[in-house]
Image (cartoon, rainbow, N blue to C red; front, side, top):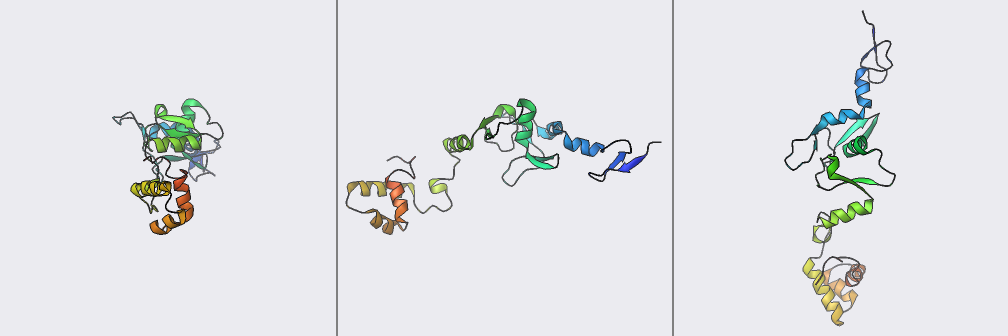
Length: 178
């Protein structure tokens, strides 16, 4: 008859000759991630069925740490993620862990990808936006005509003069063309 003890890691039962229990072994093996992937999505996404963050990204506990599901799957398929790089989505499905839908990039690459796909929170999409696209065009036109100062525009549109300076120099709302 086998003798069982309590696992010091998780409190589960283990054989006395084993150093850790089966439950802990599963927690330490990243391959368990495959059991949390649903490959049936019609657009080819492999949706994570495990724990999801408030932002909608998959995550799992591995070796006592919470890690991103995309990172676990990427590393299982492609090896380690180089320092300074992030795992980004071509498909923009935050739950997707399909390696064919993922790519490595810098934070800047990720932000440019987001902006190119129209998902950035800029302009009127920003929760604190006080100006509309039409306001920006009017501000630029009126300032270019030369009959009004940045301070006067700021007072009229109820924003700080530094905002007007960034608008007329094209440093903010740069994507908006007249």
